[in-house]
Amino acid sequence: MSIRQWNSVPAAQPAFVFVAAVLFFASALPAGPLPPASRRPSPAEHSRSAPATPAEHSIAAKVRDVLARQQAAWNRGDVDGFLSGYWNSENTVFAGSSGILHGWMALRERYRKNYPDRAAMGTLEFSGLEVTPLCSSAALAVGRWHLRRAAGPIGGVFSLVLRQFPEGWRIVADHTSVVPEPVRAPAR
Image: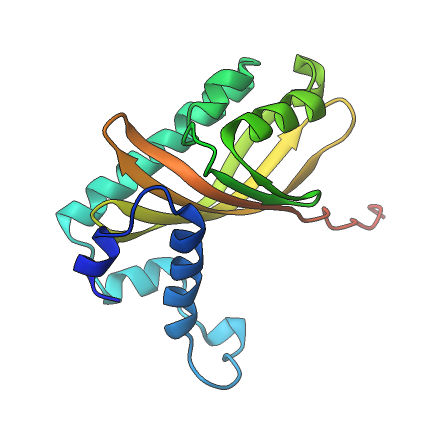
């Protein structure tokens, strides 16, 4: 798919954008088994081999800003502020452990049900963020999330597809998974 074709995808079709992003990255994978992790280039080494353009740096900075504002809103107990990073549309898609949700309102209900108060919300931290601009108006972001809370820590990974709208960059598709924390052996 060319950039011109990608830019013509209507914003009302985030599922298409998400699938196209997955296919885009899948097509870049080598055939056959991957080399051991010890021989794979780090993200920093990989990015040095294909320098980003100023436009790509700008897109990545704007996406990082969306996530920084979400993290700050979450950490002050502002669920609606956190949700302002999502496209307020019935076409927003969220995939998680409880299935697939469609629509910003359904996403809001999910967050309000699962995080009814500040104690349940805990403190959110994003890490390992990698942003890949897909075109001038869409980007893929992957990373880790971690909540420190009284009920115990929880965390995992996420992949987001963001689109640029007149009001700014917004998440149109979110796939978030819980990844259990490794069990650490007691110190001897």
